Figure 1 (cartoon, rainbow, N blue to C red):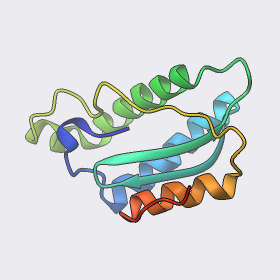
Figure 2 (cartoon, rainbow, N blue to C red):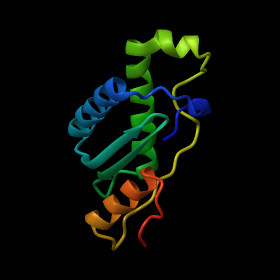
Figure 3 (cartoon, one colour):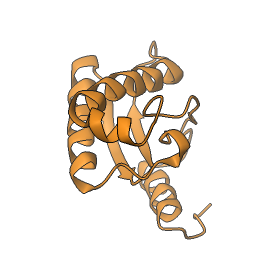
Length: 119
């Protein structure tokens, strides 16, 4: 998920609150957050879902819930930046398939650090 206009908004304080919030939402719904990484203008979530849960529906739920959460706490900063919303309208959803958790985490970590991700 990327912030609208890639606005550099998710500093350390905001990121910590956002990750804690997403973990509470995941606990409430039975989603297993294996890894959540927030960078200044986007976030990566690696979740374990139950078969009836649609990855796209889960992503939309987390985006909508967190937008409300962030507006409650940081509405002034978002208004000052003239953002119509927190998140861009789209997101990427993928399945780990036969890749191990360690492989997916290494891929996401390398991407975040600007390195060529392992295949």
